[in-house]
Length: 473
Ligand code: DCT
Ligand code: MG
Image (cartoon, rainbow, N blue to C red):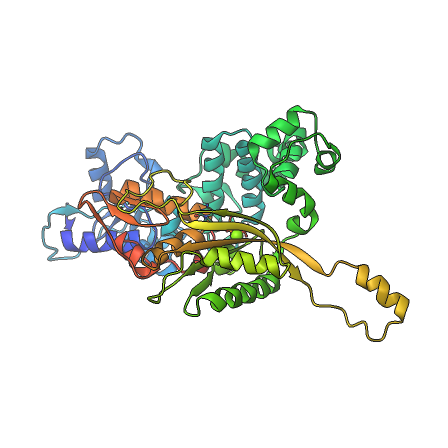
């Protein structure tokens, strides 16, 4: 049988991998598509027989033109008739030289979201919303494995450039286990999933959903409150004997404001305040909005900022000065400053969800809302309006980073959370490197890899660059 040249094969594999396809060099369980160039259907069948794979009908046997079409589209295209290897296509080109590797490539979308592009344009919202409910419910039960399974599936479906309408559409996709498949099937057939509906009506889920929406309340506290028989935030508010942390007290006090999402306009307004305040102390400081807003979202649950100082002047007191000024100005409703715990030369954390070591502050700011023009009102109306609350409580995270770690911090804090998890998983499993919000360490070379931009970090990892707005995994 004629074989594909090593160089060409490597080139095609590299190209496919960069586009987020999973390409294997050996036949295995996970192979779904086999691509051949200059080989007939019978030749490929013959080859398959020699591989002793059992039932060879589970593979799609395709011509290289299918692979090329996939590369152009950036996704697996339908394996239409024109791409399939069939019995009649036995015309073999003359003078094909004998080369050392078989012309077989299996393709698949990558299991890592950092090898896919995920914009906010989600064609599969009805599926991904369902998966996120399932993931959240498992998180409430502290079943991390199942929770991650649903988060990964949600993330994968968000990256598809088409709506899934039949089970055939998800054939061969990674991250789709049996639990996920069952829910997709139910939604396709019934329009909704009975399992998801059950969760949405579940008393424990509903209570945990409310409790964890309070700033400072996680699964542990929710569990405690649930065991006490509490079910709603209203009941928590009424239960005066509860011991609340300072953070939870603020969470309850500003609950209504904090659960109503932050808009892009509010993020821009807060951004101005942060920049102005920081620059009164350090004019050269770089203040960057990160998190969901950097990924192009127009709402968020908080606003995340990175602050770094590229100039020669250092100021370890910057964060404290900013906070003190806001206190004086009456803009600070709550704040929890965490000092840096970074240790130089220490290897990055291998934990996928570890907290970083930057000096930071979780705050609640008072954002004054534009006043309604009341010049035409009478005096009593003016008095009445003065009583009306003219501000909104907004959750703000400020993170201070040394300039040489800025790119790593930016990559980490831009998220999404799932994108970050997959970057670290990819680094560890595919590159023998350890990535966190401070650094990238190459375990084989035993060196830290410096980076002055996010592009450089992707390059160190051998990944195609993914723009912030394509990281909504
Ligand atoms: N992050 C991190 N370390 C933390 C907290 C967050 O690296 N201790 C990363 C993960 C995502 C990103 O920062 C922003 O976090 P969130 O604000 O929780 O998420 P978001 O994507 O901004 O979403 P939201 O719109 O809900 O704020
Ligand atoms: Mg955020």
